[in-house]
Each structure stands twice: as C-alpha cells, then as structure tokens.
Length: 87
Image (cartoon, rainbow, N blue to C red; front, side, top):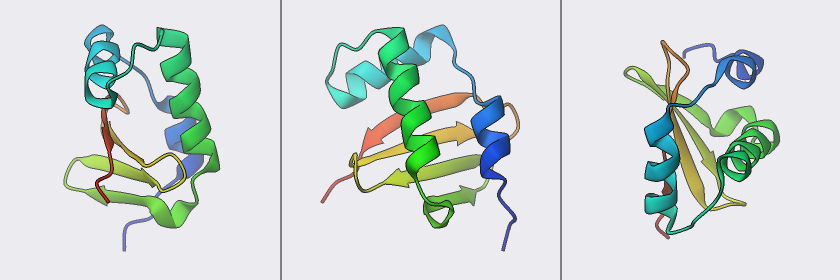
C-alpha cells in the first residue's frame, strides 16, 4: 500500500488556467476561479484518507458527499479535473 500524505496534497495542490474551464464543463457549472478553489479545498479537507487513492501518476479523491472525484497529478500536484461520480 502506498503511503499518502493528505497534508502534502492540501498544501501543494495547484491549478492551471485551463483546468477551471474543464471543471465547469465536466460539472456543468459556471463557477468562478475562487469558488472552484474553495470547493476543491473543502473536499480535500473533509474527505477521509481512505477515499484518497493513487493509481499510476495520479491521486484520486472520491467525495461521496459531493458526488465528485478529483484527479491530481502526483508529481506536480496540479488539479487535472473533477468528475461527477456515476451512481
């Protein structure tokens, strides 16, 4: 099992300009950059460590409460995308 450091992800995660558009498109929203960052920060803080996984070069954070999955690159800590979880 890989040792995930939740605090490291919280401290280092970052964004590219294009990811804001991608997130709004995937979630079918029109959130501002600040609202997206606030949403992701809250999910990262509130999600239990057992819902953090690492597959290949990415971290996946699953939030059942918000019904989303956040994908973060494990090398650069850049947020790649946010997807709705299908039920």
